[in-house]
Image (cartoon, rainbow, N blue to C red; front, side, top):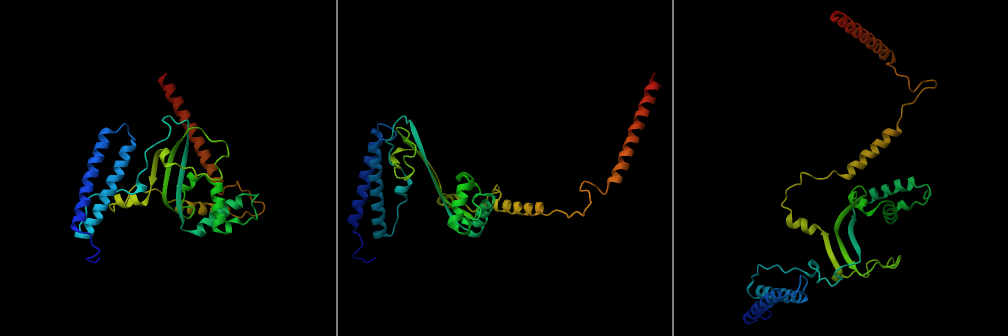
Length: 276
């Protein structure tokens, strides 16, 4: 940055004073707040965040220094709740992102579904990634796909769940054409996010000893099991499949067992006689 474009020391000082003023206003709003979601506190928070961000930028441009403050972005917070105090209905909005990491595995799983569906035989929808996705998400529940995503050749991305309040339940079929069009952030009762961003923040490089079993390995075991089940020994005509080569030995063992039981019975009888 050239010297002409740099902010002046007076501009940096003015930005610092703006932060002090915004800080005082935020504290006053917090002290006077009427409830947990007071809009005055929310507005004061945004003003303080904007003033701190402006000061941080000017300080860096002028003196190549930064502040210790981390300004949360708009995506990290929700506006104050303005929905009904006692909701009569609610909607659960879920979004999960996946990357198609292994298209061949995805289509192979779809072919299994297609082969098991007699009505869908010959449709060959599993020959494309688009068709395979339609088959799998039509066959399995989203929660099951989430737990078995590696088995389907998918790589898990970010996900979020919003629970939004409503005054009354919508009529059947009312929102099916645009299911997320009326998602109002101000009616979010609670929200749960899962993101790789959080992993980057808290991951210290320590491997998780309780890592779950890889679903891909389970799928490969299933394939091996299917092959073993399909492979049966050939029987010559006239052979009895229930005949055991060791049947004679088993018969001898049975006779020995019977003799042992008879001997024990005779010994027990002799002991009883001696007692009398």
